[in-house]
Image (cartoon, rainbow, N blue to C red):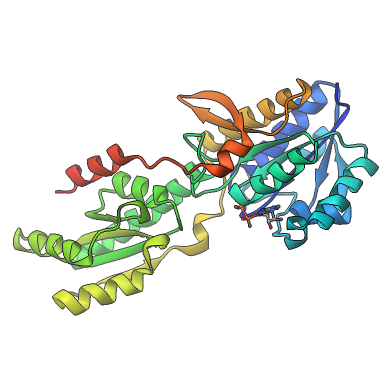
Length: 320
Ligand code: ADP
């Protein structure tokens, strides 16, 4: 059985990463193994920025956003030479298995480590919910709640001033944050990369609403569709309608994780340790139908997150 494992966070930070670190550390210690924290993602793996974590080191973090292990992008890890150094460091510290908390880029790193024979398990930590093999990624629920909070506030002004608001949320390739927040907040229009709509269709909808006496409007745009300012200009050019733009930006990434994300992180961290101790490697933990599952990480990086068309249709139906 393994005696010593490591844990790192990589790529964009997400609320719930700390709760996952805590879970990995304490689940490991509970089972009599040592857990080492690797700082600054794969960069720390190459430079040897590695420290043993005790149960008390992960106290008081379950409720904190971000990641106590810090995160970084590391180009060197994408090279064979860089990974060879990383493997050497792991050997030097006697680390025999690794938990990587991050997004699809970080999982590519995990695939490479697995190919080198190093047992690696991935935990999906990204607010975008853009990972296949899991209904939810860590941080998505928290970010969603942050967005909803902001849109609720904007809606008060939209209603009082009878204005149209365009709100840009994160999500380059995956529109889940826009879709779920738009549905949850009763947005009249949701613009996502998976279902690109012609701007004329959107203008038509705005005009129809106007004819029915609807003077305020919420349009949620995923950044992958284009900038909210461009959408505002296009609407102005076609319909001479004024809109107000809010780009939510990085407020979406931070903050105290929701109860859902904390519980999910705790369950995923625990499962990751269990898999490593069972001799598993090259897996990603997910949650499907409220069951914690494990998929081959290679499968995950070659697939795409499935778009929920039913949800999109529902949002449309409810925003008539
Ligand atoms: P995320 O995990 O949020 O998608 P990135 O795409 O920036 O974030 O990836 C995080 C890190 O994972 C990169 O900086 C790099 O160190 C590592 N990584 C990404 N792609 C690869 C790859 N093809 N091979 C090895 N490591 C990779």
